[in-house]
Image (tube, rainbow over all chains, first blue to last red; front, side, top):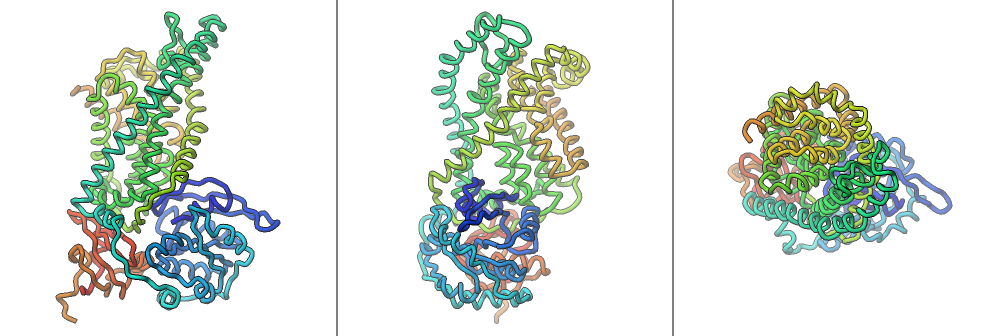
Amino acid sequence: MGKSVLFSRLTGVRTTASNYPGTTISYTRGFLKVGEEKVEVIDVPGTYTLEPTCEAEEIALRMLKNGDIVINVVNATTLERSLYLTLQLLEQGIPMVIALNLWDDSKHRGIHIDVDKLRELLGVPVIPTVAVTGEGIKELVEAIPKASLPGNTIRSRDERWATVGSIIDQVQRIDHRHHTWLERLQDASVKPLTGGVIAVGVLISAFFVIRFIGESLIAYLLEPLFNTLWAPVVLWISNLMGGSGILHDIVVGKVVGGEVNFIESFGLLSSGLYVPFAMVLPYIVSFYLILGLLEDVGYLPRLAVLMDTIMHRLGLHGYAIIPTLLGLGCNVPAVLATRILESKRERFIASTLVSIAVPCAALQAMIFGLVGERGGQYVLIVYSTLFMAWVILGIVLHHAVKGFTPELLIEIPPYRMPPWEVVLQKLWMRINGFLAEAVPIMLGAIVVINLLYTLRVFDAIARFTAPVVTGLLGLPKEAVTSLIIGFLRKDVALGMLAPLGLSANQLVVGSVVLAMFFPCIATFVVLLKELGVLNLLKSAGIMVSAALITGGILNLIL
Amino acid sequence: MPSRDLVTLTRMQPGQTGRVVDIQGGFGLVNRLSVLGIMPGKRITKISSMIARGPVTIDVDRSQVAIGYGMANRILVQLD
């Protein structure tokens, strides 16, 4: 609805915003200059009332108590339902300014709002704004010192709705308009037949576009760059460092026959740069470009409606498809996004399913790179196994975890064509997040791998775990190193399987087990924060057993 | 009013329009629906319902709202 976009406009602090309710699941602080004074602005999750229905809304209400002034962002296209919260907020006794956002949209829809009259009736400043273009932002800032509180009458719910009704009668006039093609497309997207066709079309094209962009970036840009420009530099440094030794191996990696194998050498300058930048980054870019488009166009809530019946079988409702899709990028924001779900039970099931069966973009990039090399059918086996694990585990958890599944109730935003700069800015934020948070851990993982090899820690562990790794999973006993490093970064960990000379089937088992086995450290930390110790332990127990069972079965049938 | 025109949202046909007359639920449900514009007196148009007791999507105040089957079953509508 535009609160986060407005916040970014006011403070210059970038936040993730999308075209569906529930994108903001925590608060962000920023500063704004009003006249000579610097004031703090806090962006909070959206809510319809002051009676919270989920964790995200609770956060919004907690933050409300810290504010001196409320900037109430009201959706001009659905003024009536927005005013209920406005009245509730005024009853709290906090001075208010109203940003009447999506102002352009309301005009296009034939909704006429008498702003002066609204200002007079509510007794607070009302400023029409269009957050995505910046229209009205200057006026909004100027209005902040004029924030006012027109006496706080406490009303009952029915009295509030009566007041809202009388305000609407006085300020809003609507022209009847015919359906536009975009509105027809909106309707078609939520009908069983046409909606199903559209969903399949959207998801399949998303998949192929993501692959096409990712692969092209690798084949035509990054691989040539590394092979022709970077490889000689690495070899030169290798010679400079004497060609071997612990330090050499950490910095450059193993050099075999005067050549650097960027995937298998495991040095900071070889694999440490090649894996994040030439294998993972291209897919991060393409995945988040497409996800961002789907988010901003407003498609995801419609997918939630279509998926609702299926998701109910897994103990979730349709809106849980949003954390699940986010998980295909990175499991960390996915676990955080479960805050839009109503119950603890749903959050537990959704987080566990995401951590087990939804591989992040970094791991997927490596699956495409390493498993895909052996043939597309093997990639297909990995994905179908994970999908089946997702479904089966969901059904099991649905029956095993006490409680019931709340029902879907969501406002579906209209389709909008997002401005390109908005899409690209969000993409940049996410790429930046990957570079700042993932790359250091990947480099750290490489150092840890080298040290553990040198200290022969891996050998000791490998002997100890051989019955499981070799007996149950059919992998060479050294593969346990990959599972251990999977706790740091799963992409690097999958890379560790490359030098082991695995058969294609073994690589499939390794990828699946690695994906399911245990969350990476970043996901582990958010799971701990969001679920608590006890539920995290339960969740982790489920992960380990599910991974071993699935790996064992795959080993038997492949 | 003839009772045959009074149906639950789930039994309404896609494309039909009507007026909400009652929400048969507790305070919480009434509250959650009303902030999405669904309350007695409101004109709504049903857009679709998913198969196998899936959610119902309606148009209310020129915006779309999706409602789970169980909730939709408790919304009574007077057809036009």
